[in-house]
Length: 345
Ligand code: ADP
Image (tube, rainbow, N blue to C red; front, side):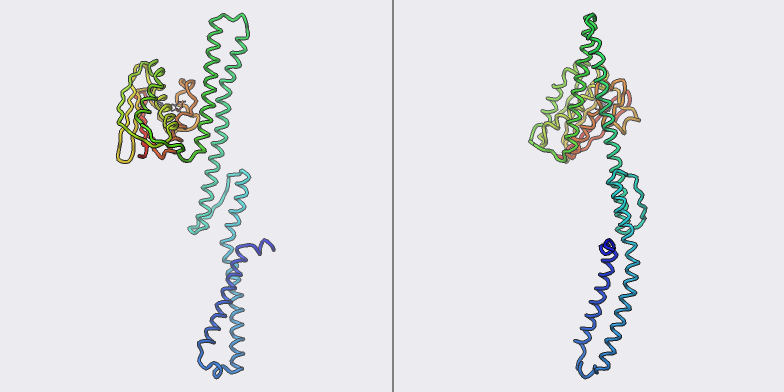
């Protein structure tokens, strides 16, 4: 009873009766005020008749109206109650909801938005679980490897060249672990960041030049040539974030280039954007990988997977989103890849 008295149905029915009563009383008032010589026209007998008739009409209208209103409001309150029950299920973590109201009104819109929300939550939950699985896997591999080699080098009779080889592997794997945790922390920080903080005005062309120098060891090891065309550009943004963006993209261009290839880097001013292109003549991206390269932990070429952890482009994508920019790529297997980044002025 308490639940009913608080329901939309009860409230709308009471509202309806109130409106009806107010309308009748107002109508009666208007008739009395607007009638000239009221005392002469309305005798005591007539007055009583009018009042009886009015009372009967009000009671009849209120009765029929309330029943109709009560039935009509069921069409509003039933789906709301259903959606409310389903909300409790979603709160418990059950995202398999079934709400099927194909109506074009507000209730239909609410139901379709609710379905969309449940679908999104399900995806987020799936991604979270997938992320945890990937993190555990990525940590487990180098840790097992370090553990294995440490056990081997405990043997004091190990030849010195083997000792060196195994300690090098341990150092490499530790670096990989360090890199992995830095990238996971970076990504989690970026996931919680909505806008660019600590923005300053800096020279974008200078920053690109500095990044290329920073990666010199890697590109010179592969004997890569670099063709650089950078227009002078002052950019307002977070310098550290932008630096990370170029390190990841140019780092990939180097990593996926063939020996003695060329990397082309350009920066141009367009109408309302700055356009950066980073092109390599490397292995290219396989067609089936193209839709997935920005996913966390995705690595396209397993033979090169030891060189990364599949977080580089996920970080790039997030930085671009925070900067309100766009990123596109063109790639052909065995020919090369070109990433185009557009940053708003
Ligand atoms: P990784 O640590 O493997 O480099 P990324 O997130 O940076 O991870 O890249 C994801 C995948 O995208 C890579 O494994 C690779 O398959 C593909 N990829 C990225 N950049 C390039 C590129 N310049 N050339 C070819 N493939 C690339």
